[in-house]
Length: 638
Ligand code: NAI
Image (tube, rainbow, N blue to C red; front, side):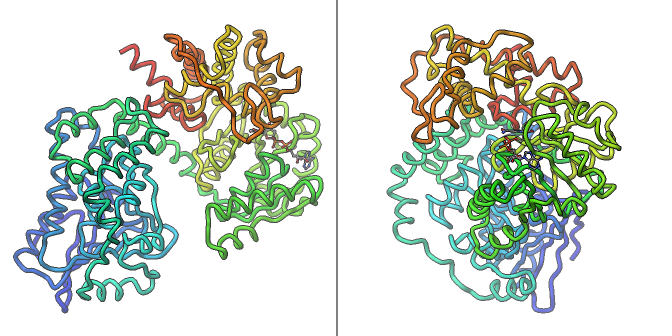
């Protein structure tokens, strides 16, 4: 074959089966950049001239099949023409792929996302390799855009509109078994037989499994009903002024059968929206945070967690879920057992298969005597927030630890400089500060004390990355980044309640701004006693709000006591209806938060403005479509 290719190789075997392997030059993962697509187009040209018996498309990367379009190209879309050209490029090419006369098959192993799945959907067959890394999805909505290369057309045809809209509107991914079950993959096979299985399926002539009648109706005459239902679902989670893309996906599917080129004004509007720009920014921030610790060759196998309370118990469970062997220590077995119960529920929810649940549970070992200490690569202390207790513990465990093990505290409010005074090697203590609930919160602050050992910090970041959380290095300072910025925000919200604005109205103002939870409900969730203590530490001597004081005096501590600003007796906050939100209330409440972020960047608590934005988004849920608090302020100032 004489095509000159940089990213692809094309080979035809003795049987006449062609295999196109994508191995994007200079990258560890495949993405569909303009030149990758143009080379693919030349492969199709070539095969037009010498039609093969069939074509298998696969990846040459360890990492997976194809991660999606090349996101770095999005920032170059500064005119409507460029946006449309980008859509046309994949849409046209994949239509051409779908129309070739010979059978085609995508052999999907590892991640197959966005444009990668759109390519696979344009093949006649999709064979999924059953291993844990195999994940298929159309996550464009998370970048504020839509799957315009045929995903909105072909996914609903393949799996029915209900499942397809669910995937496209949430961005969630599915594994190989599930893909087969829902009809996205024609088959799902273990890695060792994937090659013969691919050839067999390719030449099988097997027709596509037809969609059930109801799904066909939903993709035809009942489209309007389905679309309206989907709009209602989306409206519960995302307001159109903040997140226009999911609404555009529904419209494009309903009115244009997924062809965005039929509605160029929608392409322009979505691609040029600040939301898309900001969500791409958030994606890059996330990638940057994932990169911390990657220069370390530290790899944890065994983790020892001390304190099986709210935090320690859930940290231990999370580490076991992520494949580590975990010993969990507390004063007695009775104190450990509630954590094991919660762990089991977490494993059941996340792993679903009984064997996997069992294996995870076997990795989590109750250890009241602390027998795990000498074997652990990482030790995380999560006992009572009390300096003397922590000192006594550190004194007891340090002599038993492996010399290279990471010693970390999960403290929220104590100074690392005070905690480490009892250590023979004080420079080894780092903070690994998780957020509650551990399984939901992506961010973990990695805290560097004055004069701390840089290698320990790097190893801590590597560990956090290893358990699939986002590490954010911060300097030791009261409240680090996240709690320090939340405190003045929650204080401002409670001052507004003191002024006579109802908690419901205050919360509604911030929900409308785009926060995932109102600040008053957040105070209730954190606990009013904790908010009070944090306020003392972080509010610089300001008086506590009256609404807070009066409730704490009556032991109304929020969710955990059943009553705070709201009644929690049903397990959820019982909210009355919100009043009219006073003009400018949201801006007024968010200002102290943004001011504090500016201050912390100036003080060097977090390295730069971008990381501060990333930290606040992933640590608090701060409206992602704004691109973060500092980006939000910069946009306001124009
Ligand atoms: P908790 O009170 O729920 O759990 C503490 C556990 O430590 C208890 O089960 C207790 O029996 C055990 N414990 C106390 N002394 C011990 C010792 N010497 N040896 C073994 N076990 C001992 O506390 P929580 O909320 O889990 O907090 C733990 C740490 O995590 C604190 O430092 C806190 O500042 C920090 N943290 C708490 C967050 C939260 O939202 N609760 C969030 C982030 C950090």
